Image 1 (cartoon, rainbow, N blue to C red):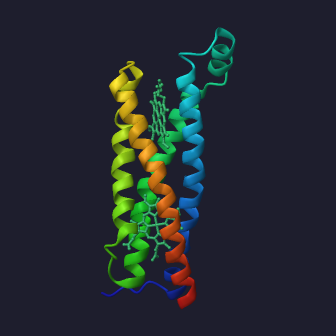
Image 2 (cartoon, protein in one colour):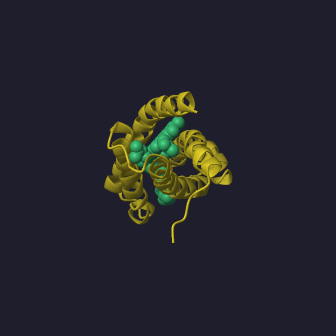
Image 3 (cartoon, rainbow, N blue to C red):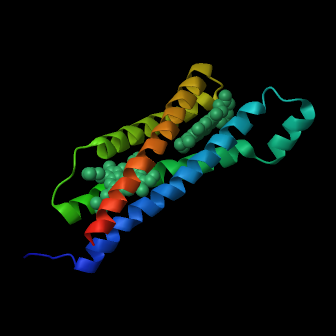
Length: 156
Ligand code: HEM
Ligand code: HEM
């Protein structure tokens, strides 16, 4: 039995990924800010420390980070699915490869959580370096991503 995906679904499926990814870029900057706020708890004066603990920045960072991780994995797989549905193939270019790389980096960074919670400094620095790399690459993905959107729109 053959199953054909309706043309309208094919077309609209191409816009879900770019919209989600722009939202995730903002979310990752928020996670970055929360991460450095929770880092500050250790070195801050008692008054600031109290305020940061009351604001629950550690837990907020963990929750935001978990959401970011899950949506980035889904968003990457979704981008590949939409590309395949519309083109019958994937384009092994910078956007695909950098995207897969970013997903691997953020998953590895998240997996360090148990050691960070025990206060392991190596895990903390690795987490920060991996995630700063993810944010840097995100800027690049946004540029190449918008170029792909322009190509799709010009063909409509
Ligand atoms: C944009 C991505 C992210 C950035 C820039 C970031 C940054 C940071 C920073 C700066 C810290 C503080 C380290 C310290 O205390 O010295 C931290 C801690 C932590 N992060 Fe992230 N993070 C990101 C994503 C995530 C993700 C995806 C997860 C997990 C799902 C996560 C879980 C944690 C945990 C559990 C801690 C330790 C908090 C504690 O001390 O209890 N982060 N992160
Ligand atoms: C930030 C803004 C981004 C925009 C505007 C954007 C835009 C796009 C567009 C328009 C496509 C083609 C979809 C289609 O043909 O239906 C695409 C594909 C894809 N995107 Fe993104 N993207 C962005 C970020 C990301 C990020 C952060 C990742 C991964 C972490 C990612 C991973 C992918 C992958 C793996 C594909 C499939 C590429 C292929 O096989 O050619 N994108 N993106």
